[in-house]
View (tube, rainbow, N blue to C red):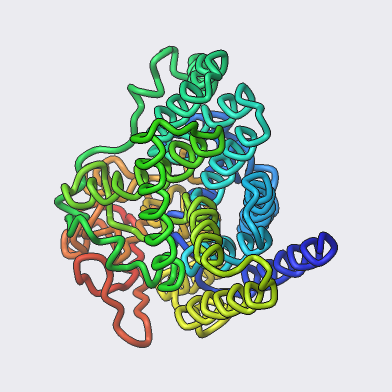
Length: 475
């Protein structure tokens, strides 16, 4: 069995490498490209390691891979995702769950995790820290668990919500010595960033998220459940819900009857179920209220997917416990039947592989090809917002070579000649609040190229997507 698991994991890694390198579209879109760029330019700009939007832990771990281009960043996430699958399997074994191998299947073929693995988004790193901390707790290494989980806010900011849950786990497990180590990540990062910001409290004062509800809007509290089919898949969400109800009932019964509760029960309660539901309901709340720059993106749920896999496997074990334990063949048939449903659910969502459809990035790459072969290359400075422009137009986004599209009009009078402005129909009218007409009407700007997709694309807030290139001329 061990050899089979090793072979399956190895083949899964090869499959995701093929998928990532062959796909034209990747989870996260421009967000993923920006994460790659922050990591890519760490050698030239070490301060990128303190970029809180970029997530310092992700940047630190991925920047050696990012030196090999965007595919290097994809490879980092793929290797991390496979490692997460292995840790999930080891955790299932520590929890003494039957068919522990299926936790790998439940994780890798949950539709949203499947889509996020070959990408450059931070959810995979977040899930790696989370399941690694759970595994260390199950191995009775609470101090190392606390040390690792202390870095989770720097993989994704909402990781702050995990720290109180692990603190409760340590308290109920009587691992009091582990509690101070929950501060390790923040203390080390505060000290590291102090030499750049000259501010020991920079991780609070440099907080990158504000109120973006006027751009991103808000929605139903039950938004993520409405998209359960695309996040976990119908088979998994059904068994996760069943498992949660059965576990809660059993825990309440044990507490009310003052039965002894095992250590693993406290791990389940706080580190697994607690983390999963606090994360889910926390994201549901901020999307409902339209705060913390939430866009209601379903990919964020990939962060707790290894916990979802463990909860689903517990549910399957609870179902199998109804049948006579001697009927091993029947148990195997039921388990295989459920695996089939998980695979079917995943590939009903992702019918066409490799992934395609990122027409915005495709158009940016086309514009970049044109620009690099034109007489206008290289420009003295390039104003833009979409991160793919840095890739396509060969711009160091953290140097004086880069200008910010949202400031283009204000800085127009002081711009030097041969300054290029790249306006796109996604970020231009939304995040930059810069309508294209405000640039078209400027006498000192010359429209040198215009790129439109073959079929109309509606971007955020129903703006038609196109790319316009302007060059600053003499008055």
